[in-house]
Image 1 (cartoon, rainbow, N blue to C red):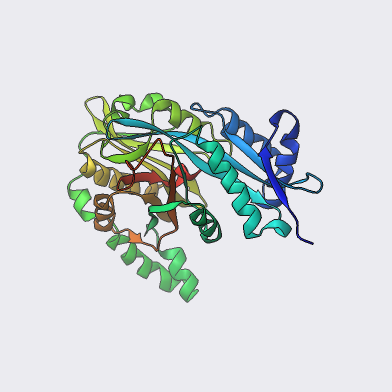
Image 2: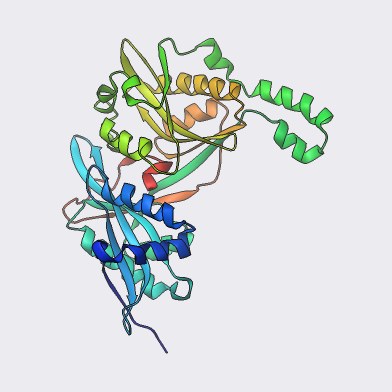
Length: 346
């Protein structure tokens, strides 16, 4: 017998445990992680509290899925926009068919029109099909760039002999160093910290980013919430500047000796600073034993060119950015260039 479904808002005062049960079954989160996730992401977002909807079976009203929205502020050509990112979509396995997914996301889209100027998502291949059926359009691709700093672990996996792997790895490590930026190092100050107060003049950096690129508002309040208050990843900041001002910041975390850069914040006209900063960052994490650096972002071609010069290898697109704009937003974002990092998806 066919099952019919309904979608309704979650009554958070009495139904959070049901949300947590669905998350635990489908997102591989513990109960404690669910509590931390909800409090941080849905309750303490400085720009707007998050929203949640249930997918329920019509015959008994039982929740079998949940979808959320998180909110961000964006800027583009002097205008300010409120964006909503699809989050924490979880549907029980026996109900993962196209119809209920379309119904759930359609309701979220309709509700969001009153809350945001546009919705965006970096969905997997299955979810991408659902969203494109609902009117989302592709706005770009998020690529991953990777550079190996210490080759010995990889060579050893191939030859299983450290005596052979070590000299070959030494030569490969040597060739991976950035000669250009070692000869032209950053001539200002370097800031390596988890304290925003140690990024001097950061607010001046945020207000001077490229105006013709769509970017998420990365002011001090946002960085504090998104990175320093995140309950399950420990992030750090690596910045560069001069004359008491910060010109460029990398946001990163370390996992199993691999470094992941998740955000890049650059002052307008300081692309060269990005290259020299990244080279300095490589030297720093290499000395601490890091094996590789990975950067995932959607951005202008000039950024890709800098990474190529630094020896980073471009992988196939990890995900595509899909966009759904409200009538009030119009077509202003149709041809825009975006600058989004890996963590703008969460």
